[in-house]
Amino acid sequence: MSSFKKLPKNIKLSLSFLHSTDRLIRTLFTNILWDYCERFDVEPTYDKVTVVVAGIGDTDESFVGVTYEGNNRYAVHVYDPCLDQANDTVSTHRLVSWAFVTALCHEFVHVAQYLTGRKPEPNTFVKDNEDPEEQYFFDPYEVEARILEGFYATKFGVPLRNHSESE
Image 1 (spheres, rainbow, N blue to C red):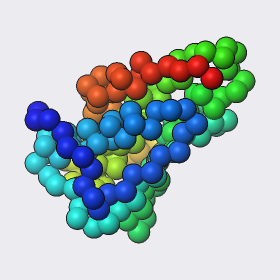
Image 2: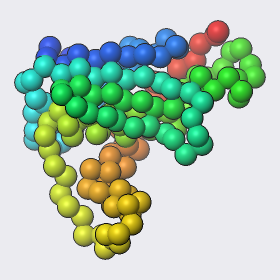
Image 3: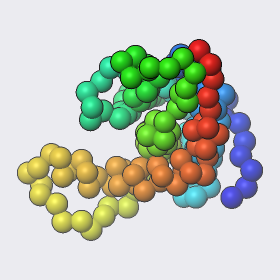
Image 4: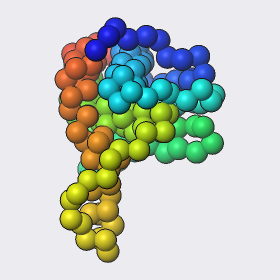
């Protein structure tokens, strides 16, 4: 893959995290978007769009991340372990867990899917059409995001994973 560029001027990326990882998360998003475009031979939209990414805390144990979309606006919420005050027992710690990086990559794949209009190929998994959990799990967009999340976390997420700072 070629070296990556900046975000197109029509794509506004806003980040909301308490730790100093904005530059790393911005770079992660940008690298994923351009790799996705190159990998699938697609281009991002030319429409003006806003992508807002925020870390949230105090969620139920099963929540990792979610992406909402509407009116050329995308909201990505991921569980941010540094906001989990109950488990923050030391003042100097690694703020970013691998699960956090992987969740960001998964949600950033969904944003890349939206921004490019690319529709993943339907899969051939046999699923129970009456079971909403199976519908979600085998949805082609979800399958693609799960396939790429680990790859992108390993390829682009290591600097974010290795980030640490003193509070």
